[in-house]
Amino acid sequence: MRDEVLYHQKAAIVDNVTRYIRDLAARSLLDIGAGGAETALPLSKLVDRYHAIEQNPHYAARLENAGLKVSRGTFPLALDETYDLVLSSHSVPELLIEPYAAFLSSAWRLTAPGGLLLVITFKGSRGDLAEVRQELLGEPPAPSEEHDTIMRNFQRLGGRVRTERVNSYVEARKPGHIASFLEPWLTQDPAMQASIHHAFTGIVETRYKVRDGLYVFPTQHLFISCRRQ
Image (cartoon, rainbow, N blue to C red; front, side, top):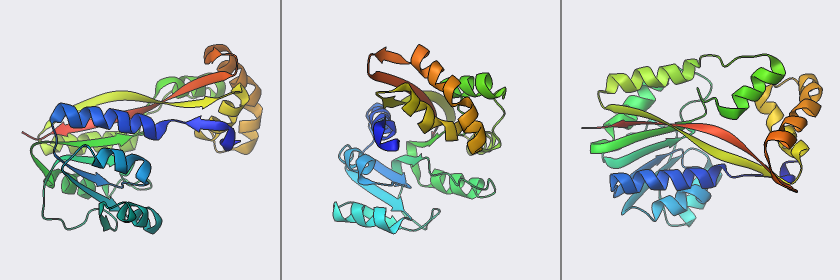
């Protein structure tokens, strides 16, 4: 089913981070959890100095083979440079919130004067998917401890904090394909996924049809930034 769905997450991230780089006139970028070359390569071409941090050996090797500077390992790492833009795109620790303070304070120390620390996350985002969850499962949007922890740590940094909501898009030729792709985002219970599939398909078909054979559903990211004075 996933082969029949296009998820334009990486393209949306590249496009919007490009906007941040240009608005900041950034000449250097530290990319924490750089992932695959699909995002790292186009971003690296926008700055004079690009440095990736990547713990996945396969991704790290691909970035190195592309000629990019890579530090292998899990952030925080001991680095002695600062950067105009420090980017953490979906790389803040997933399972525990205890490491957030060390992660964000270390990223902040690597942010140059006048520079920007930018965290991209789904934590605390809502958008259309949250509305569908409430409609189908009766679950209203709940506070996100992860998001609240990020914000508390950002406020302690002393910079100017800003949150922007940015969509990426799931695209498919059939509404049921989008429903199947996104159902695990609503619930991990296979029986519950099956029970809501028909209704979710109907929502996609009714609300997210662009034309015959094209359905597009938005997923919301939060771009949380802190500007160093």
